[in-house]
Amino acid sequence: MIEVQDLAKHFGAVKAVDGVSFSARDGEITGLLGPNGAGKTTTLRMLYTLMTSDRGRVLVDGIDAARDPDAVRRRLGVLPDARGLYKRLSARENIEYFGRLHGIDAATLRNRTDALIAALEMADIAARKTEGFSQGQRVKTAIARALVHDPKNLILDEPTNGLDVMATRAMRRFLKQQRDEGRCVLFSSHIMQEVAALCDRIVVIARGRVVADGSAEALRAQTGEANLEDAFVKIIGTEEGLAA
Amino acid sequence: MKAMFVVFLKEVLENLRDRRTVTNALVMGPLLGPLLFTGLTSVMIQRELDKGEKPLEVPLIGSENAPNLVEFLKQHGVRPQPPIEAPEEKIRRQDAELALRIPAGYGEAWRRGEPAQVELLFDASQRESRATVERLRGLLESYGRQTGALRLLARGLSPSVATPLVVADRDQSTAQSRSGLLFAMLPYFLILSSFMGGMYLAIDTTAGERERQSLEPLFATPVARTHILNGKLGATFAFAMTSLALSLVAFGVAGQKFIPTEKLGMLLDFGPRFAFIALLVMVPLVLLASTLQTLIAAFAKSYREAQTYLSLLMLLPMIPSAMLAVLPLKAQSWMYAVPLLGQHLTITRLVRGEAVNAADIGLCLASGLAAAALTWLVTAQVYRSERLAISG
Image (cartoon, rainbow over all chains, first blue to last red; front, side, top):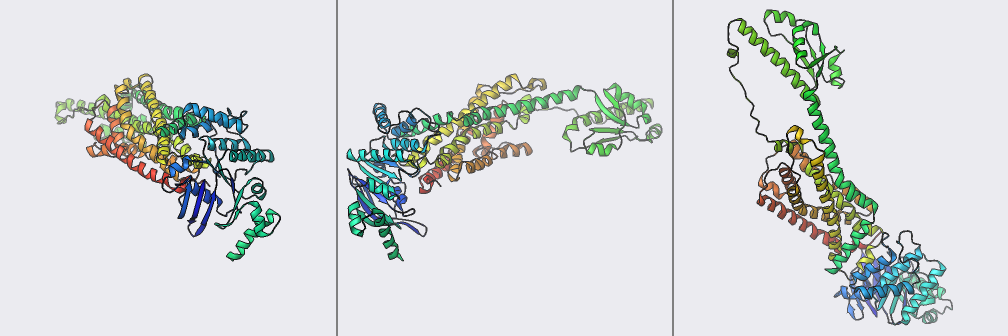
């Protein structure tokens, strides 16, 4: 369970995030939808305590991220926008490194790594050094690495960026499976279809603010558009109209 | 604590798999110093020896004016060469080392008993020719003294009348202190190998990791940033110290097998005691260097940029070596408190086989550790900043 209350962050004169509130519940997939530069990545970075907020609060399973950032990071599995791997380590070594950083004991780590390698269908690449991996192989490894400590909450920044159709479909299946296991899944995207296909709940962000929050049905009803893409454009457009 | 060790092990493993790092840090770095050093000293020593034994080849201009002098020079190992055209210019252009000119008026002045002049042509700015020039000058002066003594005897006077003062040289330098002068660059080579040993890791673990975009996921783990920093610093330090230790071993082997110091009656102490104390006094300096390298790499935007800065940093340890080579200062206690200078003095003394004061070593260690701790505080501050993790 991730709760965000009135979060704000500025860089110089630019208000990157300006009062964002929403919550992402366990057993649901929440999509953070917004155009490029809307403040999605900055919001997520504050969630996983890479950045501190100027204002507002982040609660993960009821723990305040500002008070106990270590405990919050322990409860999060994070796939950041930056998802570089260690190219001189094998995929398995990359995953195990993060497991050890989380303090997982050797036996549990082995089981957990095996399970993730099976679930992400990456047995064929597990022993290979990650140098020269395809985009899909890299994302799989990065996700396994993020989930190695079996976190209750998942934060993924544009997880399907650069993936081909097959890899995207596999990713969607995987996220749904995570939800069905009762996890709280929060991901950001600027792609309509993706959010529509996957999310139980959509939070639309534009210009650092939440401009809509609800299920796909609710958003269509709110705008009176049958097509979600039109609804999205209308929501963003309206907001821009208001701002001007 | 455990996480620090996990980071340390991973950085060591990953960098051991990098051929460039291993070649530079563990092969090139440790071997470069001893190789250069052995080569240079061998050439130097060989040349000194050659000069003493080799016949002096001197172009003689106007040798017909002083047949007796030429005969004397020939008897004392000079091999007269035919005269050269425009000797001044040739010497300036380094086409000739030196020349001796005997003017036409030489015989006339000699017969009249007046000082007869010979001209010794050389270029004092060429250190190379100094020994040859000194040798020829010595021969000419001894010919003059010998003739002067004969003239006094011919007039019934004792030659000692004309020698009211005799200077006797009593050189107090020991074989070790002479070799110390020869080996003034040694500390630089040792310090350089440790700088080179740590440099690639400092870059790879900070600037490299950010450039490859793996720093952000790393910071999303619950491990405290100072622990991550310490693990990385530990790996950098380990590589630097390994490089230094290998370098000391290489120097030990080179000193025993390849540097013909005994030919000049010099002794070099590259033994285990030297290696141990040198390693010990280098610990704070290597800590300081590793931290400083990491700090600088943390400011660089890319791997390349970090590499440029750190290459410049490698010139820093040259300062005390160059300074002490030009101005041979007497070591004062306070100098041991200056990181780099302290190490330089200690290693120089050690290699000369001189005792090093425990208090001086203590001062050297304490000041180095204090400087390293201060740099660590700054680096930890930079590591905690939001900006560090964000790539691009």
